[in-house]
Length: 442
Image (tube, rainbow, N blue to C red):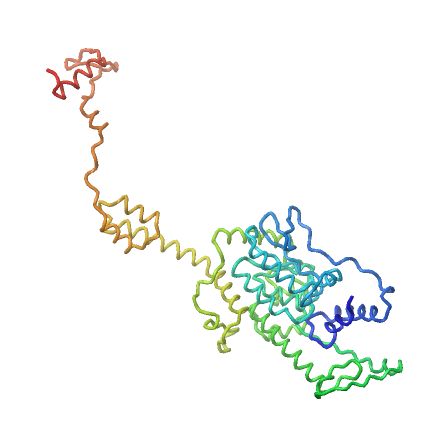
């Protein structure tokens, strides 16, 4: 592992991770850095996403079920960018998740997306951008998240951006907070007989050096950055989950079991993985039937506004907030929209068929009403320009049959003449009678 590279991720950088997990990573890092890695107990390989029978692994790396759900794993410690070595160490990059998310959106055989999350969080850098992409994905396909079995800090930020969040009864979510660590090894340096003397320009250049205690100014700078990210985190969760910002802050970065999380509004349902998967598959089928999830508003992102509550003034919405507003509006309005659309179509059809110009133009009127999308006005104009139907054409067969008198039959079903005497009808007699009626014979 590239120790200096890992150190820049671990120290003096804001992290959205549970403190316990940060300590574990820090201990492992120190063991490697000090040559004690062999003494560490080997952990199991990073947990993979659940194996579901009948799934297909796509080229992008996610699984797709037979019911049309793309399963995207968010499992492990989250980092802004990850390569194959990082992945083998249990790290997953926001870049990889974003790539799989886009591939699932473009996949014609995936009707819905499920983010399976089991992560203690990770780096702050990159999480907000990915959360915005997850929020935007809801406009195109149902995108849900499940904490299976944990969604903490940065991982919960991503989960909150999904349309619906569920968790099994044994799962936990939360840790809505920010942490930054600084290591001071100046005492260790002194014991080792090593003295570091930085030569620098700019008063703040060595604020976070590990070879000196953290200065008051450096601490204030670090706290300001942590507070800034915390405000962003709280605001995003508040908007995603429709929670009051103070309610989010009141969680105090705590960890909550599923039922407590449901009571707080951090999740939408306490249910098993299988139940969530089945419900999402059904939702995906409904949206495949109703068509793409697109916003009906024509307002540009700069024109649309939304407020967290009635007491705050409206402000221009960013991409994440716009996507959320559009997706929410579609979900809440889909039933009413279908009803309005059905009523409008019935009114259009009835207006065409009942229009005065449809008189004596019934066939054309029915074609315009049932086979086209023309408005009543457009259809009326076309009907007015069309000739009216003339009297119905003579039915030749009916005319011919009318020329043949109905035979008189007796009680026994046999033909009789005017004197009610049985007669014999032959083909020759019928043709002879027709000749006489046509004037060809006497």
